[in-house]
Each structure stands twice: as C-alpha cells, then as structure tokens.
Image 1 (tube, rainbow, N blue to C red):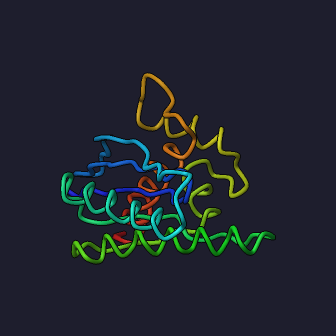
Image 2 (spheres, one colour):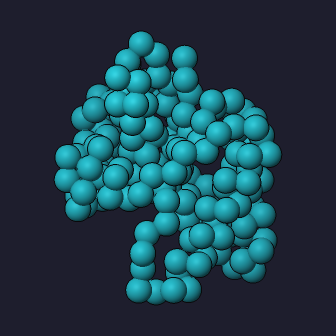
Image 3 (cartoon, rainbow, N blue to C red):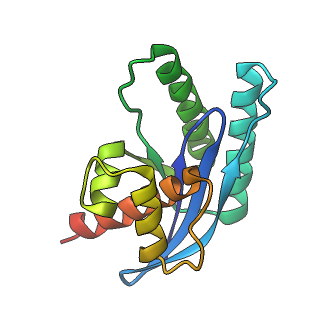
Length: 161
C-alpha cells in the first residue's frame, strides 16, 4: 500500500487529503485543512504550518507528500508568500523522511479533469465522482489537495507502464 498526503499549500488555508493506493485502486482515508492564525506574523504562521504538517505526517505515516507547485502570479508578494508556505510544508516532509513530489496546477487539472484550465469547482466535482464521496469536500482547498494526491497515483501508473 502507498499512502499519499496531498497538499494544496496556502498561508491562509492549506488543504490536505490522505489517500491509500493498492493494486490500482485508490481510497480516501481522511482530509481537512490547516489554518494558521490570521493575526500572527508570517514567521509564526509558517511555524504553525510546519508543526501541523509534521503532526499529520507522524499520525498518518504517508509514504510520500504530493504538493501543488507554485504558479506564476502577477502578484509577486502573494507568490513569494505561497513559496514560503510550500517550503515550510516540504521541510516537514523532509524532516520526517518522506519523499516529496511536486505537480504544476495545470498538470493536476489535466490529470483529474482532462482540461488544464479547469475551474476549482470542476476539480471538486471530479474528486467527488472519482472517489464516490457522498458530499463534495469543502472548502475547495481540500478538493484541490485530494486532486494533487490523485495526480500522484495517475503519474505513478503512467510511469510504471
């Protein structure tokens, strides 16, 4: 069995989804969000992200972290802050000895919907359908994180052909 923690990084809300894969079948284990306190300085929010990600890794013992890669943004400050959040999350994985795979947002959208320009709502719909969930995961950060984990499995199947 390969357990993947998918991460949709953010300094406000980080979504995560934990999937188990075995014999070509994927099962949703759990999901949720990490929400650093908004009124804290950036360094404290990054520390919070790191600590919470480390707790998730220690609790669920994933084999790999699949994380959404940075996207190009017109807002440089937002892109830098997102990069810092990604770094804190990836460091938590590295310190726990698990591998990290990064996927561009377009790659995730293409992998899940067949359309590299899909909306977050389309991703949410497909994640709900693929995993036969009773309710769509909310907020959208969660479905994005699950989609990143599903992309890992899709890529692994493709690479093992």
